Length: 136
Picture 1 (tube, rainbow, N blue to C red):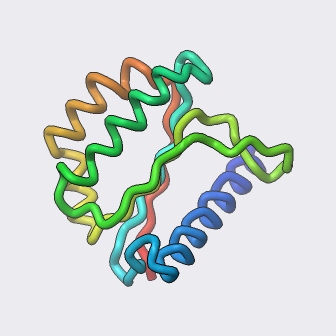
Picture 2 (picture 1 turned 90 degrees about the horizontal axis):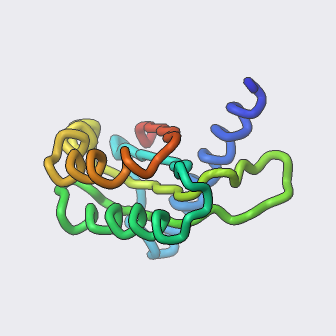
Picture 3 (picture 1 turned 60 degrees about the vertical axis):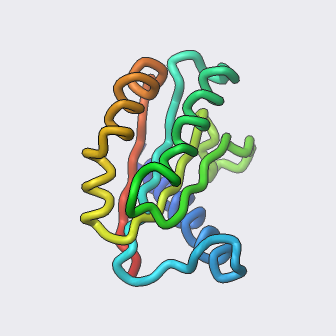
């Protein structure tokens, strides 16, 4: 189990590095020291349910334009893999970058986010894994 967690953390770090690489190509704003990356992996109660997955994705997409402090948002479905290092068992993955720790804290308390968690995520999600880090 410890190895699985380490492998998941490594794959998340690689995903974030790829996001930064894309940012440097102009696809996402470049990360700067102090930015906070927020990664959320969601396992649905009804594994693979396309309608539930779409509901979570569409709800989260709205955050970008409605909640201050969000620099970038990337959300999607797992890419199936047979590689042992890849955990593609989740249903939805979300990577958000915030301008600061304070912006992340404000997002957590924002009524739009709170409502989405209460009305969409909590009823649909069986499990969440969240990772946050500060850009150096």
